[in-house]
Length: 243
Ligand code: IPE
Ligand code: IPE
Ligand code: MG
Image: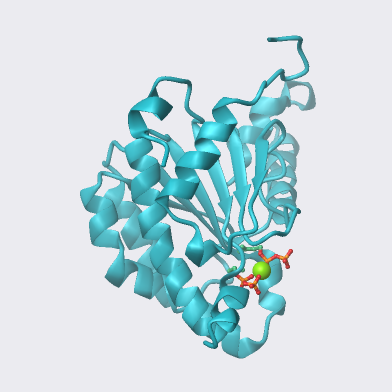
């Protein structure tokens, strides 16, 4: 187990993004249904968020439901749409008590009225918390996000409130769902897949990647610490010649 003090001695990643994959396979291996995996997976978000906050990470993004996940069987979608409620009931108090602020990234127009209200309530309740930001990506897809950016910027140009020449990288950043959040420093994907699955494509431009075979419900505090420790031993050059 890597001790906290050891991690704190070196530069920490400001933004860690998690692709919490493998809930279904984890449950199946235990002879349980996929829903059990999703429940344990949701509970694990709390455990890992509290640990990330303790380490001193500023932003933890978690991929909870992708724009592509609507392709799943309706029964599974229905279950996944109950996750915000379970999260509110079982995790939000502890998260709030840890001074963590919750924000959601993604489309809201396809989320039902009840869940939208719940998301707004969680954001509102935790908005003055000064600890880590827990960014929950829900009905999130990076390509959808970028299309949305292009439309909103194009509208401003058409209206005359922005000139084409004034468009730069910061213009794009300001129109992303993740507006105000730093770029991803460390991307972790559980369960052995080595792909981004449409997650934070712009934000991950210079992220360090960590792929682990461990399924999400089995990814615990010590595994997060190890991933951060490994990150601290990477040589980030950003195109330059550092180190
Ligand atoms: C991740 O687990 C959770 C979501 C994508 C909502 P999966 O449901 O993808 O689990 P596997 O990958 O099928 O095991
Ligand atoms: C990525 O996992 C999306 C989330 C974790 C929410 P998936 O299980 O949906 O990804 P693919 O289909 O294996 O790429
Ligand atoms: Mg999966």
